[in-house]
Image (cartoon, rainbow, N blue to C red):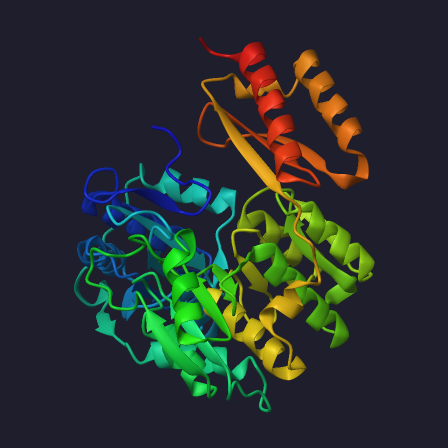
Length: 452
C-alpha cells in the first residue's frame, strides 16, 4: 500500500478511495497516536473536535470519524460546518487533544479528505502521519462500558471562532463605509465569512454562499473568479474576496474587477506589519513560485524573503522554526502566526480590508506595492522527472535562458510531487517573451527525458 497521506491530509473520491471504513480506521489510529502524546498518557480521556465543509459526503464521513474516535475512547465534539482554520483555532482555544477536518479544500465535490490537527491546532508532520499509518495495521485494545467515548454537538463553537476573527483586528478597527462582495465557494465559510465582515460594519454582498451539499467549488470561489469580478463592478463595491471550499485561502478583486493574487496580498500585509513593528526579523516567508515582482518589491521595502518549497506546510515549518510572523503562497494561503496556526482566508480578507480602511487607499493603490511580472507555466507530461534535474542539455538550456533574462526575469523547473510531470515556469518583462522561452524549455525537456 502506498502512503495514504499527501501534502495536506488524506484525499480521494468519497466512497471510492476515501471510504467510511478507511475514515473510521484512520480516526482510531489517530486517536491512539495523538492521544498517547497527550490525554491518554496523563490518565484522562482525550477530547477531539470534528468539523467538515459543506460536501454531502462529509455527512457520512463525519459519522465514521466520530464512531472511530468514540470506539477508541475519545470524546468527540461535532462542530458542524466550519472552515479548516476554524477547527485548528478551536482545538487550541478549547484545549482539545486533537482535531479532525473533513474537506478536500478547492477540489471538486466528489472528492473529500481528512485532515488531523494535534494539540494546539498544529498540522501533523510527516513522522506523525507515518506513525498513524503504521497503527492502521496494528491490533488494539477496545474499551467497553464507561471507557467508550461520548459524542456531543457544540455548533456554538463556530460563534467563538467568528469572535476570534473579529477580535484579531483590534478594538479600534472598523470597516464601516466599505462595501465588499464575498464569494464563499458554497463552502465551509458560507455563513462565517459574511458574519465576520458584517460584525465590523462592512456592507456585505454574498455570492455563492448557499451550499446544498453538491455545489461546493462549482465554477465559483478562488479557482473561478469571473463571477466575483463581475459582481464587484455591478455592485460598485470597494473590493471582492474569494475563498475556496474550506476557506483556508483568499484571493481578492479590486474595484475595477482586476485580480489581486496571493503574492500581492502578502506584500500588502508585509508592509503593513513592518510599519507596525509586527514583522518578525523584517522577514516574510514565501515559496519558490512567488512572482519575481514580489521579491523585487520586498527588497525595495527592506523586507527579506525566506523562500521554501511549494506547499503551505513548508511555509509554516519555516515560520515555526524561525519565529517569523507572516508567510504565504501565490495561491492565497496566508498564515498570520499571531492569530492562526494555518492559512485562514477569512482572517486574511479581514486584515486586507482593514488595511484599506486604515490607510484610506483603494485595493488597487495598495497593490501597487509590487509589479507582477508576466508568468507562464507549462506542465510537461510523460517525462522522467528525476532525470530532468540532472540532464546536462536541460541544465544548459536553463542556464542560457536565465542568462538571457538577467535580473529582469526568472526560470524555474520543478518536478511534480505526484505525477510524471515537470513544471516549467518562466517570468519575463513581457508575456510573449515568457511564453516563448517557456515553450522552448518545455520542448527541450520533452526531447531529453520523455518516457515514450
